[in-house]
Amino acid sequence: MRDWTRRGVMAAGGALAGGAATAAGDALAALVSDGPDGVVSAGLIARQGHGVLALAAAAGRRFTGPAGIAPFGLDDPFRVASVSKMVATVGFMSLVDAGRIALDDDISDPLGFRLRHPALPDRPIRVRHLLSHTSGLRNGPSYPVPAGHALGEAFDPAGRHWDGGAWFAPPGRGPGDWFAYADVNFCLIAQIIERLTGERFDRYMSSVVLGPLHLDAGYNWSGVSQAKRDRAASARRWLDGRWMAQTDGTVPAAPAVAFPQPADRPPLAEADLVPGENGFLFSPQGGLRVSLRDLDRLAVMFRSGGVLDGARVIGAASLERMQAPAWRFDPARPNGETGEGGADGGVFAGYGLGVEVLQGRPGPGGDAFFGESSGDWRGHLGDAYGWMTGLFWNRRDGRTLVWALNGMRETGRPVGRRSALTPYEEAVIDLGIKALGA
Image (cartoon, rainbow, N blue to C red):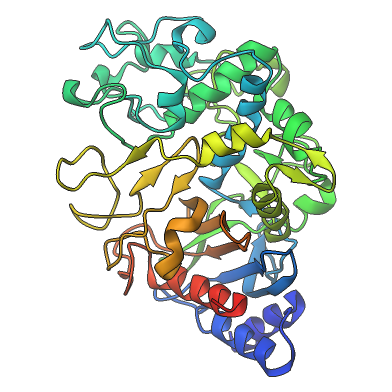
């Protein structure tokens, strides 16, 4: 295993000079192991505030297809998990900028069906509630609603996916009252995009965000070249004595896409998909496939105020709205579910519109992921199917840090020493912050 680890580090390269680069590679390699106490691959890219590369390194293996194994590198695409939500918000805000929709609009109108909490029929769910996870909605047992089924059936007592009303929070945690992280919020955002534009979510995102940034990336592999797909790093977990594929064990050949198929009818073709019917289909909540170099370009765009290489992807005012706190955890009067970390803290202590707004709460249950200056950092974590990812920028000095770890188990994870993250995430962040000199 050590040979694979070292080759992964050297293939990815390091931006630090001499012994510093070797030390960075060894630090990443130390996280990689065969077994439950480690990960199969790890990588990060860190940049100074003026854009100079401080560190770029990767270690470990990628599994591609049924038998392909190679060193994990900075150009290998993977399912980035919830960082996808932040990127989807960038695309959505272009519609806000164009006056097609407003943050305080009732979502029932653009969705085409009435959506209310059944215990609060007179209180509208607004667009900003979806983007800030304060909508009073939850992920129901039918998650994800498959192709050929309307997402609206999850919110209709007569629908196939009503699930006894499990998609709704308790009445005291209705729209605007309570933060609870729920993927369904962004599936509804994707459905609104499709209904406003008449375009499939994946194609819309390619045209307004990923294309202008010159990224060979896409939701559920949409628009990703075959050459990039051939480098796919499948999501892995250590199960039954080996690294088992969780997703992307088989990647569709270009230009095909992946989407959840129904169990009650024969499989559907891509041509059968109806825009505006089901926002789950292209996984806006987590299905973006990108590489670490792609994440680095996105991070530079964010810290540059929405511009990259002369192309404006999001208006400066809209980006500021994304970064501003829409919700903060109040430990004196709890107003949300912070995730793991105990009653007084967790991964989520503040949230904007599709962006985590760190509050810098110190200690093992807190969100001081970047140390004392954590309150200056914005971005998003990802955690699904074994991948643990992050894309963050410092809004004060412009530093950026992106990372990815593959192979984290779902339960029984080790507890971080200084935050609500795992020790593996903390180790990668510490490596990046050390390279950035702060």
